[in-house]
Length: 253
Image 1 (cartoon, one colour):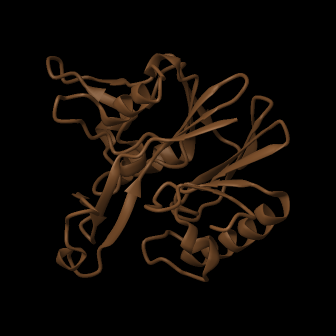
Image 2 (image 1 turned 45 degrees about the vertical axis):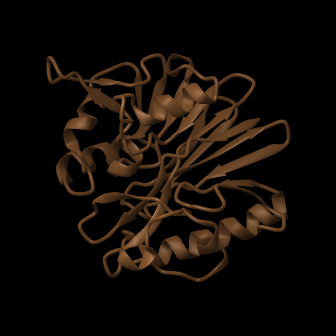
């Protein structure tokens, strides 16, 4: 398998849940609002023998020339957005789902950004997101997930997607958050979304106030880190500025 992080940059986020671009080379860490977090935003592409998988969809930001950041990143990796075969969504918070769809400036309608792909979304997460709305969810960007055969709404708490992908609902970071294992050729790639967002959280007992069930997240991270170490998983960390990809058993782990 080939793994490509699609780094959208570092952002500062506080209690308002606004993501403010932060240049780690020049901006002053002390000037961030008190209590704010500094996070990377980075979806991943995993290329298997049969699929080009996109794991979460980024913030939906655009470059100065109006190009969707995630599509620019894909292009720089040699991938056309039409080539993505599956989009696996851990959950639908705006920093993970902002790149799902784009608004047509002429009609105001939203359309899916990866029209050739099948989107795999927890049905209960979608219903919750549309009901809950802002500031964590942007409902109008999620409506294109309804009523289309390009979207597979998962109802089970765990199961498989094709021969090489497993999913499981954890209910940790959000009520219906799910995680994924991609297994091929003796290699296991684990994507824990915001249940397992950073390497440092895997190594320490840490309960985050922003999690739906922080204690459960902490325990799941402990279990995954132990199992992953024993089975040599490759971990993908969506919000880690320094370590987006960690092969268990390396110096970084």
